[in-house]
Length: 334
Image (cartoon, rainbow, N blue to C red; front, side):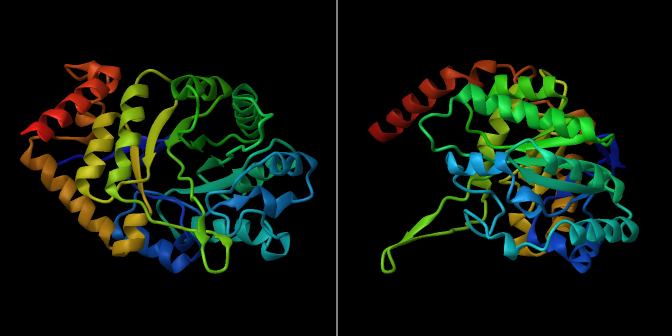
């Protein structure tokens, strides 16, 4: 028998396939369908900082200094009237926890430290098995330094960790001057896992209306490579566990993520594109591939393609850049 089990955030999971945050997570019918299709755990949709305290001085300062957007927000500067508040979220989480047999991970999406983070404890009290802190801030101010942004991330993680007893994963984007150092800082701040990576939903231009319009494009497997690169570089070098989100659509994508060193791989776009039953197909294909390649467990192949395990670690560094450009030139000359 192939052993697909893994561990993540102190949770024992049947497989490494996790259904990540999406609009479907707002509906218990869809959550039950995810469980039935084989999801090992679910991450609920986010409770946003704006839903809790749009009047917060700290949040106002960050927004006016140039935060471009939040990853799951409906607009760039949300109208608080559109939001339902935190109470329905907590009730939904509680119902999900009662009805599902798989772990339920709550999600907080914010950027500033302040009083709103106390709701991390309320998410814990509502029954969440763990918490995903989704930090999404893209500064456009010429006055904000990289060091101050990194400090804000660390401060927020420390404050959230001080409020809860459950494990906390930090979901972040790749846009740091030194991603490896940022990972080390989040390690020091107490993060139990890093979720790589958040996606920046870039706006588009409506040329007829001359308006900047929100634009959501679902991920493809092409986006996986950035996640593989940093997972392979960070695996076994920091204490927090690693999860991959973005670009996981097939069993092959999941296998690559695990071999890079991820404890779990998360799927949203693939389910939106192919339907929730796609989870079952990915699991079946994963087990089949492992059988054909004589792997007995997920643990056996985890990290086998990380920078510490491969024969040529230079493939993850500048040498790969030179090799890729050289090989492309040779192809062009044929």
